[in-house]
Length: 75
Image (cartoon, rainbow, N blue to C red):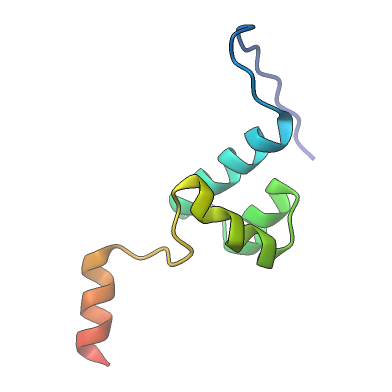
């Protein structure tokens, strides 16, 4: 397991669990991690991670609107 240390100013009040969730959500949104990998980084089950993603402004459906429209048109 990789460990990263980040020094934050005192006025930044965030707990480590939120930091892991923010990182996991962003990496999932970018397509760097799968939903399962991101859930593991965040420390949640896949189901819980999927439920919490919306709180961080990330869609479970990681498709660009154009790609989704194209898939619907081809269905």
